[in-house]
Image 1 (cartoon, one colour):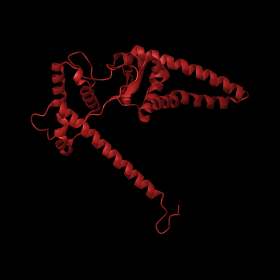
Image 2 (cartoon, rainbow, N blue to C red; image 1 turned 180 degrees about the vertical axis):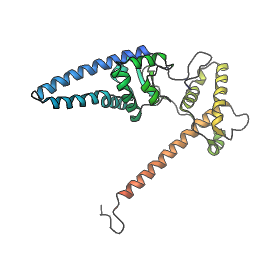
Image 3 (cartoon, rainbow, N blue to C red; image 1 turned 90 degrees about the vertical axis):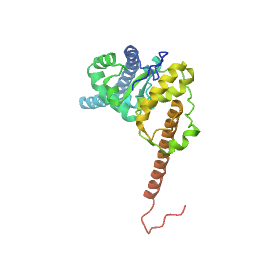
Image 4 (cartoon, rainbow, N blue to C red; image 1 turned 45 degrees about the vertical axis):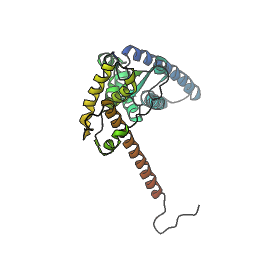
Length: 271
């Protein structure tokens, strides 16, 4: 699900960035990169003036690998998809579910970028961004990311609360994993429901409820309000994921402590 359009024409999803904006951001990044490369080459020429041709070839390969793979992967991972060019143009690269980039996705985008950005001088990426409905380039399609507009500081979202009357049902219900796009649309709908027109609010809430019900068994009691049902599903989904992460952390800590213990029969050193 790429997004849901309400009666007021509000898209309940982050708005993708146009190809022109992405192109300007890329040109700014390329300008900064070019300045850095020139400075680096001047420094290398001063440090190793009498270097052999083989050494220059090795340094050239290392420089290309750094520019094409290491640098973009590191920048995207550490800045969560906001390089200098993207920061200047007010855009960010995010996952399809709206979350921040991780190392794997940054690496995929960098590796694919060798062909679609560098070897084809950006023509493949530009054409793909123009024809794709979300302005994605090939690297975004393979990595599951896209560029969104960022307007100022991110607002602090209040957590979705569990409706008390549905707590018992939610704890015992079988909740399958929701698609990332659907989960994001539900979360944004609940956060903006009070600002929507009443008729659009009812229509959109019913539409989302119908889609979410396919991943829930059994269904909530008859007469449950759609927004209460959606809030219960998200809250329970969040609590279960948090519990699973805590258990995984405790298990990893226990296994780590066992690995650092001495073999059986050998007493551990006193602290």
